[in-house]
Every structure is written in structure tokens, then in C-alpha cells.
Image (cartoon, rainbow over all chains, first blue to last red; front, top):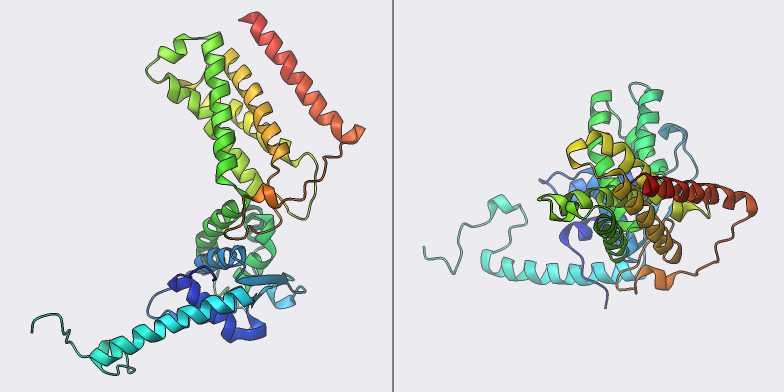
Length: 125
Length: 225
């Protein structure tokens, strides 16, 4: 049973998964920023989370060859490991159950959180 | 890849490279350069990234149990030195707090030295370097923090014995600087493949000279006290 992951860790794991072979600091940050809208994501928070995920054995990393557009600096690429895939799968299943329960009560609000009905069954109208 | 509007200043990048721990310097500097839109934004982003990467590096290289053991052994060394050489310090209102300042400085220096050590460079004396640096900083800080300064003899004995204890702890449980610590794994030293510290005559010369200087200084300060 893999260790549970927090919300930001889920976002970073999803970013790495969706970027496939192009997952490094800048691209992971950009994808994570897209996924966490409207919240801002700092590059520093991405580095801290990537290190933590690597320590947990969820991702692995390696340095590429230096690239001229980065001033001759190398990129550190990240890849999802089996443990990370399992953790992400579990958290996605939990998120799906939460989504289904909320959608059952509030109806489908795929258009955005701002357009959800302002009704809560446990709160008196 | 879109072209960047201006060149990154060499001096600025050198300063940033110096501030970023060597273990992640390459990719962090490259990422910052790739994301650069203007000098102001580059510096602002670097200022927000550096504390994060240093914190992350400290988390990876510092074992809290070992750090606590080092802090306790140093504090005990200073309290024992005060009890032996100047017991009035122990009855002083701020005596115990004053005695905690040098161990705190040595511990901070040790933690930062580990975070900033280069994992690609293997140096058999690495565990000894950080405590020696810490003691040097303590002596430098004594002149700045004069109201908190300790008597010379207490400082000499406390830092000498404290540094020896910390160095021994670090030789037994060497700091990990080049591999991540897995979650739910036993404490990191249990995963280590300990290799004996191989000290040749040349590499043993420096610690021998430092040790001799410390002993001579301790003897001199004890005699003058």
C-alpha cells in the first residue's frame, strides 16, 4: 500500500504523467499551474515537492545533456515510478468518488465551480 | 523555443550559483534561465526559489535524530566546561542560554555545510570539516555578540570537546549527501554501506595539525586561567 499523497503532490504526479518524456522543472511547473488554477504555483514549491516525491520513491530523476538555450545547463527529467502510479491511481479513485457524490447533490457543474447551484441540502433555505 | 530578450548577467548568475546548493545547482539555474523574461522577474523568482531549494536540501541531508544527538553532546560539553572552569556562569541569570549559543551556531553551520556539500566530490574528511567551520564561526561570533560571549577558557574547552564529539558522531554516522531517503525506511545510517575512512598520510596531516593546535590552545588557556 503506497503512502497517501497530498493535493499538491497529486497535481505534480499528474503533471509528470501527462508530460511523458518532457517532464522537467519548467514544464512541470507550467502544467501544475494550469491544473491548480486559479491558485498560483511557485517554482520553489515544485522543487520541494519533486524532492519529497523522489524521497518517497514515487518518481525518479536523471540529468540530461546540457542545452544551449539554457546557458549550457542540463535539465533534470522526472519519470513516474510504479509506486507513484499506484498512489496516483488511488487518489484519482478517491477524487472520482468525491466528485460523484458532490455531483449527485449539486448536479453536474462541469462548467465551473462558479456556476454550481447555491443550494446545500443540510443547510436550511 | 522563443528567444529570451536579454543576456543573463554573468556576475548575477555567479552569485546565484554560489547561493544554490551544488546538488541542484545545474537544473535550478537552467530552469531559471529558461523562464527568464526580464532581469527583475529573474531576480524575484531566484529570491523565491533559493530558500525553497535550500530547505529541501536540508530535509534530504539532515537526520533529525543525529542533529539532536549532536546538539545535546555539544551543549553537555559546554555546560561541563562551565561547571569545571567557571561555575558562576551556571548561576548567572542567562548562563544556560549563553552556553546554548555556541552549540546552536555549530549545529547551524553543520546543517548548512551538509546542505551545500557537493555530492559528486567524495572527500574522506567531509564529516570533520563542518564542525571545524562551526567552531571558527563561534569564535567570529563571540566578538559580535559580546553580551552573550563566554569566558575564553569555557569557550575553548567547550568548543574543543564539542567539536571532537560531533566529529566522532559524524564519522560513525556520516551525512548522506548523494542519495534520497526513502519513506518508511529505517534510519538512514542503517541503509548505508559503510566503507572505512581511508586516511593517507597527506590527508591525515591537516586534522592532526588542527588537533595539535586545539590541544596546545586548551593547555595554554587552562594554564593562564
